[in-house]
Image 1 (tube, one colour):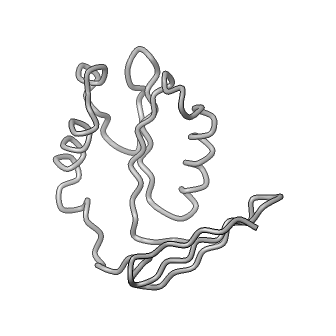
Image 2: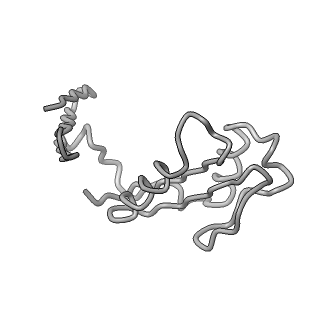
Length: 119
């Protein structure tokens, strides 16, 4: 479902919690719906990325999440915020994702509850 949400994804090939191939696939799916800025970093530092300016290579190895967020705010400025104040919660949104053998259903409500079911 398309929305104003922009996804900023920073992924190191050293990250053992999520394989890079899974993140690549996730990015390809997200690009069908929203703006995605994907920075994939090999062990030696960031690769070139045509879609957005890269986080500075000389700071990458020591960067914290806060450093990256601060850089992103500075880089994107006012464009970081979406125009509408509506959210999936205020819109009482329902989403269903057919993932082959299972369907994942996400139901949001305006009291900020989220119900997730797997069928």
